[in-house]
Image (cartoon, rainbow over all chains, first blue to last red; front, side):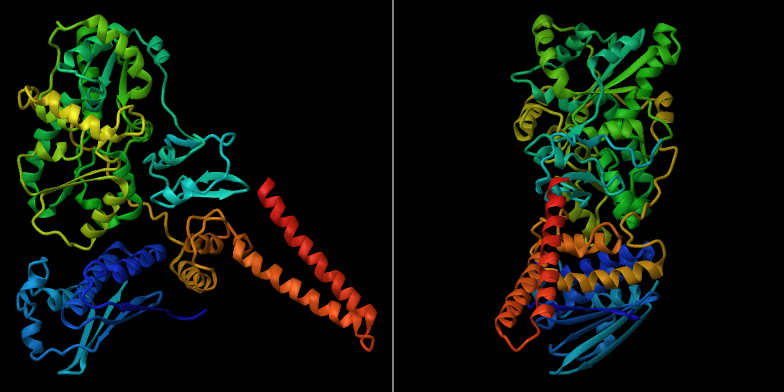
Length: 140
Length: 461
């Protein structure tokens, strides 16, 4: 038996109807594992925010999820524009989302702050013009 | 009482073993095994979707018959508001209420009247609990059961108030005892229901220890008899109604929410839509909502599987009926207050867990992932499970095997027949050991007929 179950998801660009598919798939698997409801809530909110971010800002990307019996690691990697000022991006309410995205009810500037709030560990690696990789860990 | 009691059941004699129900069930509770459907009592929420879809009428709802009235000295009918929506050109609910008395009930107590009391109580509860908003309606028993098994994070948001059926039963029993002086056991409180889910509620309620409803009749059974008595009542029916627009509106989707006098509500109907809303609520995708009304049936209670009228036509009839009614005719009095709040909590039931422990669940989930890659992914249902993933879950739970997959079987038959044709080539080749090849050939043929026998058994059992 392997120590981790690895799941891979492709996040398609500009498709809001599909955003959230990956996080709801992970959510249903965690429920089958019997992970605590609180941990499931944290994972689904943090991952959904991340998924939406990738659709809005980065033309999609890849999410790798590693589930172990103790914790879940979510690695969200995109080849988007990168984040110019990470400190500002971490502030609640700060957003660079274009108007058409805001008109859909997204882009309230709570993406990264919520991801940080609902994960136990979070690391952001970003390079302008190259892309961003966010790694989040939630322990059960 | 069994916490997984069910009113939706299978009539095995009528079941043909087709895949209609397994595909429709919103909680994937049904499997076809040995040629017959089986309902998993832990997953089932009694929504009645399988009753709707079964072409052979093999799914049945259990409820009582009119003869239960004979068991009591005094009986009270509790008509659901959806009952009023079943009749053409009905302008006065009093015709229905008086007809119920002619039909044999000693008295009538409108569930829509109690609904107005619950609306009052809900407004007060929301105002006092802005820290746990949105509150989710608990009037539909199937929705409460769904949340209990699948949405543990939403259990704290359940509105902890008894549904109108229960409040009506408590008030009706109290009134009957006062008026007749009879003990409670000689009084029969009988609900006239649009759905089997209410039967489940009465037998095994959530939120209260024991329901005050004694029996449940189906609208579709009462309807034909009631029509005749309604003619006998005529146009000048005595005014005994206790409800107005708010109470009557509970019969359709959005009705309960509209009685709260707030714009910050969401109302969803139809079990698939309900599930989507619950998923999104769990992910906190809605802001500034005070109340969420959810009904398992399309259109709300008017769409119940025990009603006779098309739900959307019924909704129009309900709208016409309420037009000249006062806003409400019942209000919460001090004496009613004790009937409204829940007296027991709803506990999360993690029935969808793959194993007993985290480690067992984890190794099973890993196996499910591997099996899903191997299975064809066509979700054809021929194995008796609704999807390949569901079959994989059944396999790791020890309830099915890979050989149940028709494509798996086809592939193994294909491989065997290829081996056989190879061996026959060898037989014609004189230089090889003829006897050994013949034995192998025999063995392969035996295996093919073995596979075919197991397939036949599966179909015939």
